[in-house]
Image 1 (spheres, one colour):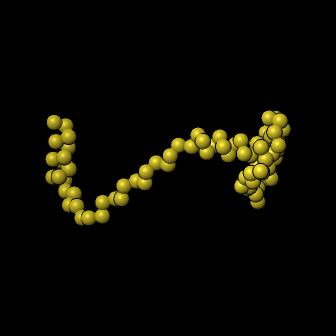
Image 2: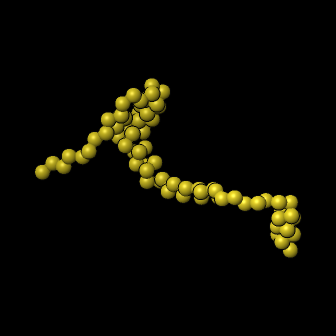
Image 3: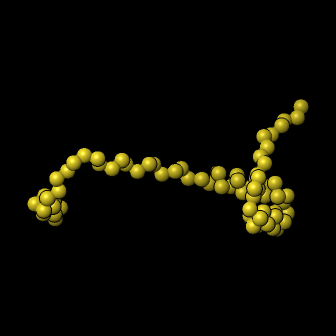
Length: 78
């Protein structure tokens, strides 16, 4: 019984990327397909999770007076 693996077709690859892949594949004695698969696996397995979304900025009104700032400075230095 033959197992059919999903395929991937890359279209519109920039010429310089194609040449780098071709050169790298030759240096590593791999086909371009095997080299592309190796690079994809390496990148995806080493991938770190994306950082969480930043918090939503405060949307309310906040009176920021000189007195409030001075008090905050004093409290922060205590």
